Length: 322
Image 1 (cartoon, rainbow, N blue to C red):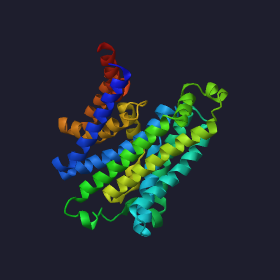
Image 2 (image 1 turned 180 degrees about the horizontal axis):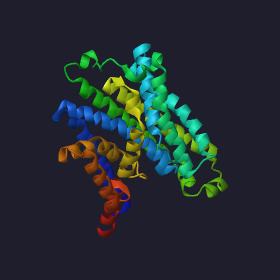
Image 3 (image 1 turned 135 degrees about the horizontal axis):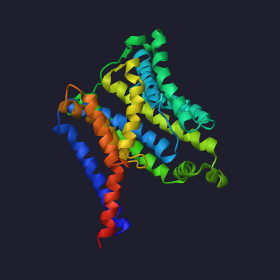
Image 4 (image 1 turned 120 degrees about the vertical axis):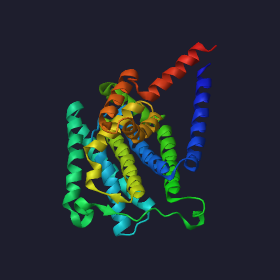
């Protein structure tokens, strides 16, 4: 089997996945469709981390802060000013992108563990800041949004859970394809050059200031979109929802799926949503212990992530098949 055959199999599997995801809401309970909406939002945020960490080689432990900014932007604009949901999510992504540019400029001066600490500080500070401006953010109590409403012509076909599921995964599909396309071109090559050897990249004309800022802005915007989706789906935002644990969970999802593979983000998002639920069923007394053991086991057995193991299996099969 040659490379073209492997790509053909990949395209076939991708098509099969799309068909399965389109059918799933009709054969699972409404609550499972709601959980899959959460998973879709996590996938979008993790795609941003794959761009930033896996492709560009920059570290961030503070993406939960951008999820919070996106969620609160949607809540404030939609609830207080009557903005449409789509417009609110787009504005939230834009605001997060601006903050991402600022973080990218900081990345020019900090590297490694120092950059990780800076982003960690961001993740810790944002929830505390949200609690202080009660008149705008609702303080500790947060903001309650109006529940999702299905457009009138589609009332007979979709429940609110199914409707939210479809537009979340539809948006995810658009962002995934756009990201894949852009990473195949000059932007992706520049990111990978900075990741592999920044000095060599500069020698070949790659501007670190531009591309690091772009990577942080791009990744932060995706986190903002995810935050907006979570706010709409839950119909509620609260500072305690966006603690440092969320940032760590997103990084775990990126690592579990596979940091250097875009489609690994899909696996990572689904895992971080459902793995804690499965571990709770295994041992309701200490689910966090089971969850931690499961994570350690996956990392030991599959150090390149689940997507990396699948890719390795495909390549191994391709070389053996005449």
